[in-house]
Image 1 (cartoon, rainbow over the protein chains, first blue to last red):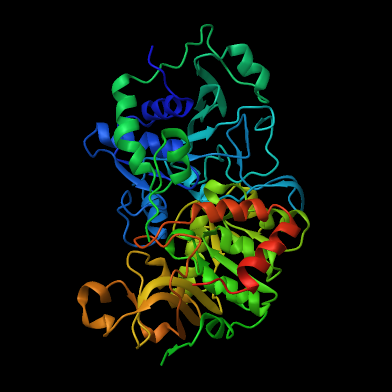
Image 2 (cartoon, rainbow over the protein chains, first blue to last red; image 1 turned 45 degrees about the vertical axis):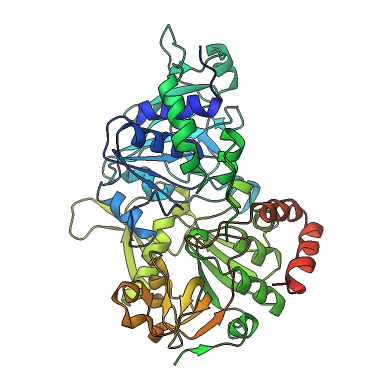
Length: 248
Length: 272
């Protein structure tokens, strides 16, 4: 078996979740989704289009930051990625605070684009590397964006799954529930149950998340890692040993 | 006519205490030299609008007690972790928070650009962002049928403040692909831009440059600030100074460390 890094396994899994689409956008603080999207594009010979927020080279927008949101509002963004300081079993995500909003115990950076993109991007892939009862909770303290809405609310998008450092869940929007899809190599179903604060469904037999192929790993390490360094220099250096060019 | 200020300190002196100031996200030219100048001036009670997020710039202004109200979708130090002075200020209720989501801020500034009182936006319904914004409304789409939609009031800042690659002596500012800087300038009563350098000639004479230029018509003041986004990046020009940002993140973790950071990097003008 080829050795691979945890980040590579997660990116490879995200690549399968993205599937065959036209346009993948990647927001702030999302180096692993960015790795997945760029690797997929390399493998697809330029398909899908990738819009990497904060990049010059991997971003075709020319009308300012609003263009991503306008594009998404029209249904022209097929996949986006969101995380949360807390995520609950109904797919609600919290990027704001824990405790009373006016007197919080913990403050996170803020909701970013979630209060909009979660509603209008058909495939939102949730990622939260720390899989614990602290992060995957029964009920979030603050809803930056809800997992679902009443039927009369315009909603063309929402969550399709959640990937963590332990496993992959799929999300059923009609039932507002997660289902365990696979556990990562070295993890167990018990370990997932033990560390998850919400109830979820699972089949009798839960497979192990497949390892990335040598071809995928080669593409990530040799071709994509240097591309990633433009927006995520610290990540590219830490995970792939890409040296950051000090230009001026 | 826009004026070319003698220094960045002179340029930001026009921003009074209590002003509403809009600044861009880091990728569009964070005016860091101007931020240091605002802190040196001792600016107070600013209503800071981040379009639509901020990193070290908002963190420093908050830590230096320049901000009374913060309107943003997020403040973090990106790869260097949470923004410590922002986090501390929210937890101690030292600032008034107006939490938003990115496209809401763009839409609100665009409303001001168009001179209309509000803009509608999809999303938001069922979120606590909306629940905590008494100034936002939900109406039934008058052109639809049982279709609730959010209305957001215009944001008309007193000042737009950003850093860009170059400006000419007529006050035209080249912003390249960062076209939200145009939106900011259109929407704000006054625009102050710091630039890497002055351009010899008129940017409007070159069709390739003029299409990506904020006309001097909208601009109050220009100041030349080489490496004026340091220690943050200026895309197409220089990357972020990672070592310095790591140092900042560490220092700003405590109020004392932050005060020391200001002494060493702000109150004493750094050597060029």
